[in-house]
Image 1 (cartoon, rainbow, N blue to C red):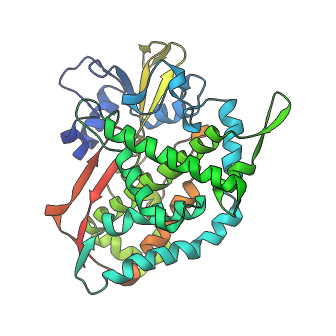
Image 2: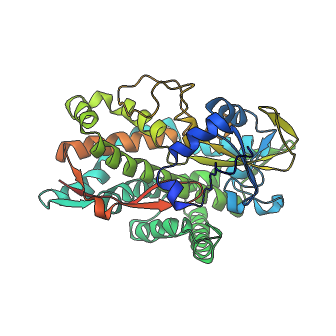
Amino acid sequence: MTDTSLCWDPFDKRIDDDPYEVWRRLRDEAPVYRNERHDFWALSRFEDVEAAHRDPVTFSSAHGTVLERMSADVALTGMMINLDPPAHTQLRSVVSRALTPRRMAELEGQVREVCASLLDPQVGRGGFDFVEDFAAIVPSRVISMLLGVPKEDQERQRRLVDAMFHVEPGVGMANDTSMTAALALVGYLAELIQERTGKPQDDMVSDLIRAEIVEDGDTRRLTLEECTRFALLLYTAGTETTGKLLGNAAVLLADHPDQRAVLVNDPSWIPNAIEELLRYEAPSPVQGRWTTTAIIRHDIPIPSGSKVLLLTGSAGRDERVFPNPDRFDVRRSTRQHLSFGYGIHFCLGAALARLEARVALEEMFKRFPAWQLDRAGVERVHTSTVRGYGHVPVVV
């Protein structure tokens, strides 16, 4: 922990380009890592990250989950992702009821139509930007359809979500561009919720409006603020991370043509490949937590009131759990990875993300069974919590 030659800085773009060697050293040399500059601790081994996810009492989400936005002031939180039980438990059940099996079952055809509408125009053109023209759009359109956002508004809202993840040196995502985009999206969703209150439809916004929760024995409906926070969480989480998963897939499958050939020749391996993609390159590799009591891990004390970063991305490469973890193998048989989280904060949209990724790859392979990267144009997006690409030009 005191080795000054070992440094992991989530804001260092050079490290973020390829953090895996640094994370390996953390697992081996400093499984409880202290960064004084940014005032956080980090857990990097699978067993420690999993255990922290299973203990929301000790590792609280109520002070934020993104490093640069974490604070001792609980009043700064309020979205479900930043709540602990019992409030989290009851509100999560509301959103779970909106993501019904019926709605998921009905969605595959719509996802396929979205993918086809984006990929068909690219046939015969020789190449396109896999992220900008496809991967970033698919999840945004799908979550927009689920929420009930009109088609004419969908592209603007997608751009607002992108702007919310804007990063500036020294402050990360706590900057004017990000905050302005968040306020604009919140304002839009609040207006949509007010409109649906008078004219409900068959969408998730209307489901949220109709939902009821029980507090102290009394039944009530969600407030406008609660509905808006739910919608904002679903919109951002449903857009950003799935887009990163698909962008990672484009790069990794280009870099591993033998693995891509397995999927083209036998698409039944695609669901397994998605799990391997999530393990190998977690779209959300860092989750922040706040200790509610002093603890000891690996004989090192972590004080109460500390920021602790759970390195999910490192856990997926932990050789203590995954044999040959740096080998990308779409037929790998693995135990549960942690890329969707674990425990009470397991990703509500996991089934949706898996559906979108499977259909997107199936439709891609139908039209483009092989592609190469235009590496000069490949561009990473750097944040302290989400990891992936903003541009992936491909030659087909």
